Length: 614
Image (cartoon, rainbow, N blue to C red; front, side, top):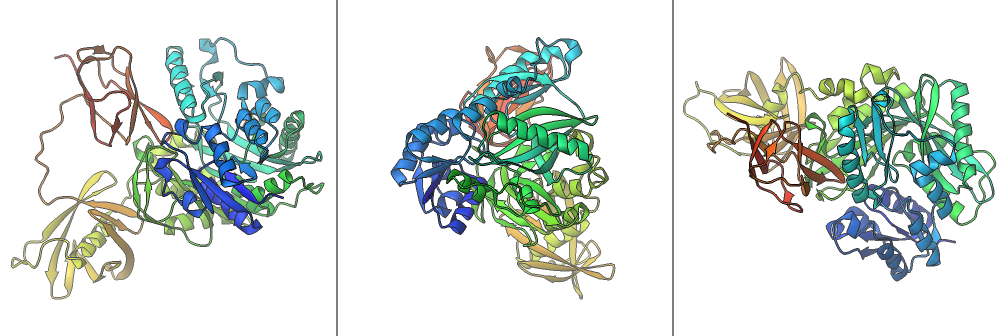
């Protein structure tokens, strides 16, 4: 029997595993980097062990340090979670060599399937040879790991070399393995997967399908179970392929076999030899705890011959600290408040007051809704996200709500190109910003944030706000009835709530302020200074950091005076485990270079200046 479990991971998945351990009476051990010293997973565990350093390569990817931590803390088992070392056969061997129980498949199964290239060979799928124009578009893909890292779509042959180099660097940083390969890229397929669970007695359960087609940067955003609209024959084929893949490597534990479904046919992508981020939707539909089942399998218990029956539909949405309207740029800062209605399940690695840093994935939480039908689950999840309280950095919450209500998604006609087609409409500013502006203004007045009474009642007072990247103005004046703003009567205003009378209907707004940032229901506004900024404008061709991060690479030979071409990669920024290329905006001369490799930068930092020819 397992008595003490170390989770070789961080954040949401560590917290989720600890929750099951508490229910089973198993003591828990966390490992944490210096950046995660005060993280929620480190606080929740019975014991926490420091891994010196902040980067994944120095901490969570150090198998030797993690195994040493398990031994030091008296753990008798290790769960890898997902990401980091979860699909590393050498790590699994090191855990077993230390006489610890490994919560996962045998190292040989990981070795056979964790590399996507070797998995395809095992299943008889020939690799793509030398890429020719007729093969385009293609996908450059990391052989190890997952989560969309180390993946690049290539549509022109002259982009292939740079894509290979960039994918290798990102994969090495995220997984400690820089191997990549190239495969055909199907533009409009559906990403469908099968959850499997296998014991040491020869039983393999196919636990339904999941659709994970809504993705950004090849990373999943919304997932659901079962995958809607698949013909029964195709579902049986997917089950058979998944079970065949598991049996071919004597698989044990939880795993996922992923496919791209296009034109009614299933194309094998990979087998993930670990628990998936989206496993809660399967748990909801089958009424089981997959982590608990993993632990029981590791203890040698046999599964029943048949899995429990499926019931209803479940949908999961991933809340990210990112700005979808600006190339999905990751966001950092203090998460002041995170609360979601109790009608949905929330898995998170953060709580109020936690800092969101630059070193790890920007996912804040996963919200999961389960209902008898897909339509009911969609409605339930969209409403819960709409009512959620998220105060802090910009998130993708509004995008998720709009996605869940988009006709193409509600009718189950989506594919992996969904955001390529609809991102502009899904991130458009709210059509009527008026009410949040007035509520923010009334809140500011209630807090005495600005100005006092004026002796010129005929002239309204103006307050400026930044909302969704655009500047807006609100105007107020005091009347005998109280505060009136842009023709809207303020009925009540205090530190937490504003009530407005709009055309005879009273609307309530929950308001919270943190410095110059004001949250009005789901809208975030920043109070601007009364007078415009008089700082000198930036020179034309200035390149600013779009997000906080680290300069991991400067183009070889690049120096002040270098001639650059429009679109030429100049710098590579790494933030939250993703690399972002900063390219020349025009053909010209590099007039200034303000950063070096290894330097950390903040959003808006001046990186370089490219001077166009006169």
